[in-house]
Amino acid sequence: MLSVLSYGRLVARAVLGGLSQTDGRDYSLVSASYGFGKDFRKGILKKGMCYGDDACFIARHRTADVLGVADGVGGWRDYGVDPSQFSATLMRTCERLVKEGRFTPSNPVGILTSGYYELLQNKVPLLGEYTQRPRPHTGSSTACIVVLDRRSHRLHTCNLGDSGFLVVRGGEVVHRSDEQQHYFNTPFQLSIAPPGAEGVVLSDSPEAADSSSFDVQLGDIILTATDGLFDNMPDYMILQELKKLKTTNYDSILQTAQSIAKQAHDLAYDPNYMSPFAQFACDNGLNVRGGKPDDITVLLSIVAEYTD
Image 1 (tube, rainbow, N blue to C red):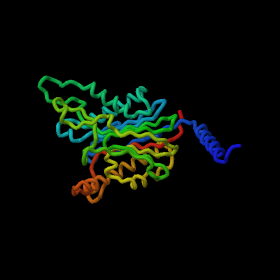
Image 2 (cartoon, rainbow, N blue to C red; image 1 turned 120 degrees about the horizontal axis):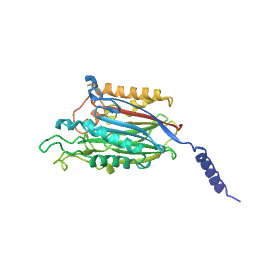
Image 3 (cartoon, one colour; image 1 turned 45 degrees about the vertical axis):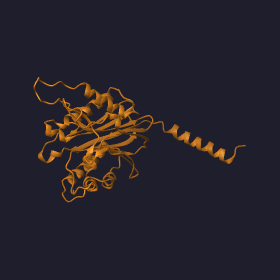
Image 4 (cartoon, rainbow, N blue to C red; image 1 turned 60 degrees about the horizontal axis):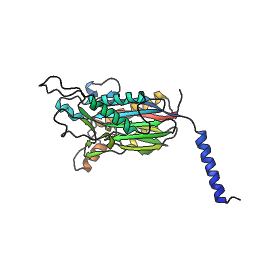
């Protein structure tokens, strides 16, 4: 005769087993992107999946859906380097690796590492013996990669620097990335230095990225963005906008992504607004108020049942 405790365990195992067997569906991400370059007010917008010095990609493979954002470090402009080149090339390389199937869904750090080292290996030599022109891939960037394993229903993430992601369920943030900063306003970053400056330029290893893995559910909302969003909009404002998202329809997702990006952009230019960035600056002993003008990239996704 089974004890009550043993019988209860058997029932629990049967229920859990039944749930796992009945949910044999593949999941996927329905995703849309929207953003603003910092120079938007000057009428300067970049084409494709680039907003100012930010870059992003959305890629699908038979095993997984993959998202990525990168934020080119603007300080390179003072040295005659276009900061968008590095971030855009990094994201295009990662996207290609995914589409070619050269990745493991459970290892997003591997995607970032492979993309970065491919850039290092393909550095273009200097043009001319005496030219001071930097290599085309010179620059730095933060990066965040998010991978949904369709079969296991697990989300695998890596984040280097101050871009990041939120996972929202039932109107609450249930998972989020951890920001990585060396010190105030100096995030972890991947870099390729010009000749002679390899030991001077701040550069982190892609393996230093913060990684996480967790299960997701149908209807979960995943927001992946650069710091231009998070520096200007606190969680409660983002959640208010996400409440408007009721369906997995692409147009609805795009409209919500647009609404979030536009609100962040408007706040970035409000001199009287105490932004998250300004609050962080004050916490570090600086007298700062207002939004933070910056490039803004928003990738908004909903976990849905996979359909061909």
